[in-house]
Image 1 (tube, protein in one colour):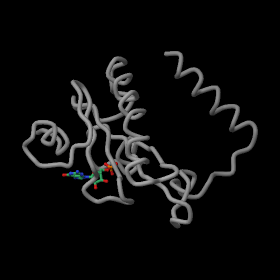
Image 2 (image 1 turned 90 degrees about the vertical axis):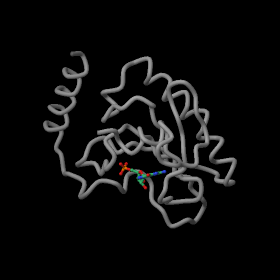
Image 3 (image 1 turned 180 degrees about the vertical axis):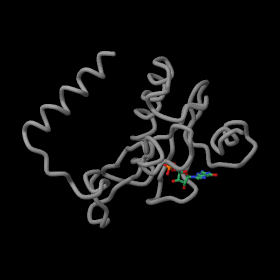
Amino acid sequence: MATIFSQIVEGEIPARVVYEDETTMAFLDANPLAPGHTLVIPKDEYERLNDVPDDLATDLYATLQKVIPAVEEAVDAPASNVAFNNGEAAGQEVPHVHGHIIPRFDGDGGNPIHAIAGSPPNLDDDELDDIAERISANSRT
Ligand code: 5GP
């Protein structure tokens, strides 16, 4: 079953599309957290960022670079948070990769990305070394 975002790509459900090219699309979030809250997607369906093939990942990043300043300028925002919920446990509800561009304003009462996670862990040096080693080994495979 196609994701709701694939249905937007196919024009089967309406959206306020703000950018489109051969492989990517951007449209306003239906439940904006700020004026101009925009989602950027690859047109093809991949659940997670790390599932996206290299060429398409390049296109997706290029579209983000194009759309971020366009969004900020449109709503006169001096900054934005750009983030992907990557997997269900991280809050991803639509299983089709999408980057959120959330415009931010001075004194808007929001938080930096550091506020996303639950209680920060207390990790000692050995644990940090161990985690770093495992990530490093996994990154090479
Ligand atoms: P997630 O939690 O998966 O990262 O975010 C999904 C986002 O998609 C939410 O911010 C939600 O408001 C938005 N969304 C869900 N359904 C629709 C839709 O049909 N149209 C649009 N434009 N946005 C949607």
